[in-house]
Image 1: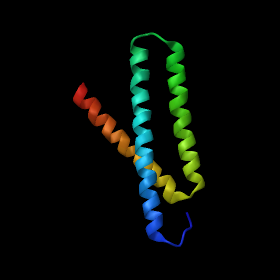
Image 2: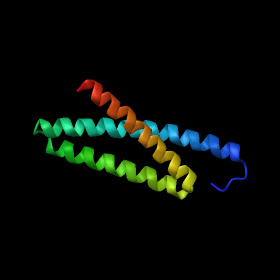
Image 3: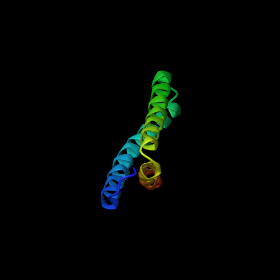
Image 4: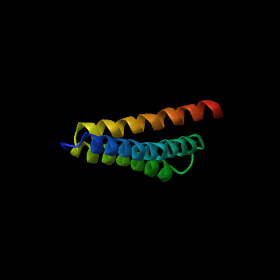
Length: 95
């Protein structure tokens, strides 16, 4: 984003971070379902499908954000890392 309005850039970056966090939570939810399917030794197609969906979604998100410049890419990455922190905290409490 080469915008001349820094306030708008910050607002958009925060919105991108929030959206990326939501997508990151979906990513880690799908990761948990993939692990459950692997541990249950069932549904090979489900494991492959969830893996492709997770990886494809993450690649697509970061690729699109990269088109808007480093600020948006880093905002998206920060949101994804925030989702990772939430997911690991929940996993530690559950296990």
